[in-house]
Structure formats: structure tokens, C-alpha cells
Image 1 (cartoon, one colour):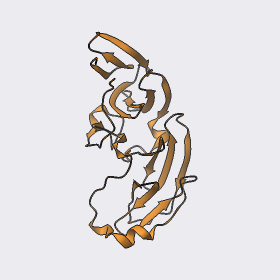
Image 2 (cartoon, rainbow, N blue to C red):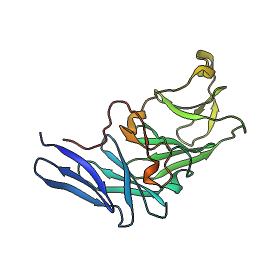
Image 3 (cartoon, rainbow, N blue to C red):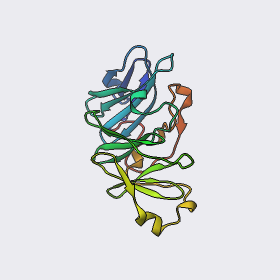
Image 4 (cartoon, one colour):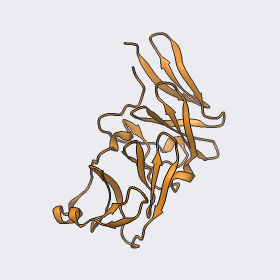
Length: 209
């Protein structure tokens, strides 16, 4: 088995075969953009890049072919300064794009399927988690279930009745291994802002065959 890894440099990302000493593919992300973090979920490679001005981009590349599937300005996906932590269900990413907005994104096409705001009390904060086939928002006082078709939320008393939400300090829901060994949870366009975070099984920072 050949030794293969994925590397980024200013303007491009390449899947490189170290055994044969050649690139299997190279994808251009723009001469002025420098990749800072690369993450993988299944066949999808997510690349976080930025310009010297601080403008951030997210690109998605198919791992085997190197085909660039889509690119988005980071500010079009989530509020800059807000943690970006997608959870995956059926190859669709769900994440909180601000403290009171949920976004659903198709990994294959890059299409934003919805951006849905919900009423959030001023002194309450939520985080998103996927439990089996359910997309759930949790605070230390209550839980909400998200409609996967349109993003609307409603009370999810079942969870609150079974566990004491005030005692929860962390969680691992289905799909959180999308951000694998090195990922961003607070991307602000500066490569130095990357945050190291542990992931679950199923993902890898570099490609392999």
C-alpha cells in the first residue's frame, strides 16, 4: 500500500503519493488564499483557507478525484467569530451559524438547504447535537428538536425528562467525527486561530488508499 497524504500550500491543496513521489491530484483554491486546516468526512475533504485581509473560504473536494465540488465564503455560512461545528446526517451538515440560527448544507452540492432563525431567550445558549436520526438543540435548562426539512424548532421534553441537562458538560453525538483529528471550532480567517480538537472514528486528517 502506497503512503499517501494530503497537503496544502498557498493557492492549492494536493493529494501526494510519497511512495511514487508524485501528486495524484492538485486542486487550485485561488492564488491569494492559503489553506490553514483540512478535514475529512467519508469522501469529502473540507479545506479552510484565508487571504491576508482575513477573508475566509471553505472549499469541498472529492477525496479520490480531487474534483472541487464547491466553495463558500465563510461569512456566508456562519457568523465570523461563532464556533463552526457541523454534525453530519445522511451526508448533510447541520450547524449553528449563529447563536440563534441553524443551517443545513448539502456536502455534495454545497447548496444551503435552509438557514432558520429561532427565538432564543437573551440569557440562554444552545449547542447542536445529532441523536440517532434527530437533530437536537440543548441548553442547561431545556432541549429543542429541529425539523430536518425546514429548520423550525419545537420543545423536546423527552430528553429533558430523562437526563439532568444542568449536569452535562460535554457530548458526542452521531456525526461529530466529521471534524477529525485537527479542526476549527472558532474560525476567524487567521491560520493562527486553528483549534485542535479530538474526533471520533471514521475521519482522518489526510487521505489514504
